[in-house]
Image (cartoon, rainbow, N blue to C red):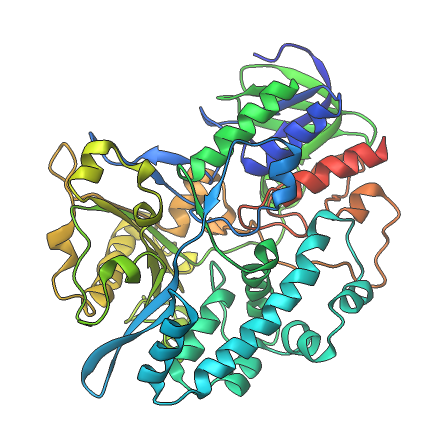
Length: 523
């Protein structure tokens, strides 16, 4: 139960961004109440024992960290760390009838040799180095702005200080840049995937949805690296909850919010079973769709997720058809399946026509290779490993035509996705799957509809709505603190602090930080 009837700030939703905001505001001396409808905090950034009787804590939904600024970790004194992966990615393929693949990582010499073996020349590796040298310079300039007041478009362009890069990534479809830089279809596909994570689009979409997604995937930490959270994703949100409590914030779980009313100066938050509490500010760590529902406002344009999330536990890593690649290297980075450039476009075309892709693209990695602490000691001793799979081009529309049929559609897509993986394995993945205490294979899959039902993600959209470039338009009114920090709504004292805020999306804490800064700046 809440301890008071009135607070300086009430936060609706206990995901990682809400916890970040709670910790900052409580540390600044504000009275803070955080309300979460589930029986635990963490939202999509949680660890769970997903399989009955199995001592394995999997990052059930979100699973890697790139956008979390070290500033937030330092400011809040978090007991949390990440570990870098020794391999960035491995992409299996068949060339001239021979199983092979592209290994990126494990040192520059290994990467250069892998490019040469795959493509027959040094050209693609040189193009790769040049392209990602450019994105790293972009990341160094853009990432620090995410925890600063929102720059205008002109100000961000000046900060980037590279007209060619700005034009390529902020003004023209990403496909043009990829096709100009690279010749090999597989290499092009590996690059394009960062523009398609949870985003149903194509390389040449004129709306630049792919560019916005790509940008957020290459600027994290100022390097673009995607790191493994030690202890699983739940270790981050547990650390955030601890920090918020230590600072004096109240965290109340099992407390759904049913309504929100505001006159722009004060607000009332109505809960299910715990009455109504008053607040000077309300921060909403939920999708704009949920905010509209609470206010009784018209719903925003529908959002749509486009991914299949699969968690697995294996008794051993499967052997690869490529005899020159160790599975421990291949699966420690991102293992790309059916993600050639042409394959990605075909899968999008099929899904846009309402059909499950014939060759579903996906990305896989093994958390336990980098961080075995998520497994019990006995599982580690016996050589067990996790696999996390993130499928692309799986829009909610494929599952929503008939709600009763949605689980069957999900299962068909899962089977087709794993079949694509099996095509590159020397043994069926099914032979490597562990079984839970009830004798069931240790596999769980989540479609966009599952994510909507379980987490309130609209249409399963992991970003809550379409991503935006991390700037304000030059004509924007930035007179209020909420507008300056990119967290404003139509109500002066109601702010977004979740992924639906400007510069939201991913496990970052950035919207939570920025909403807290807006409250503190506004007095």
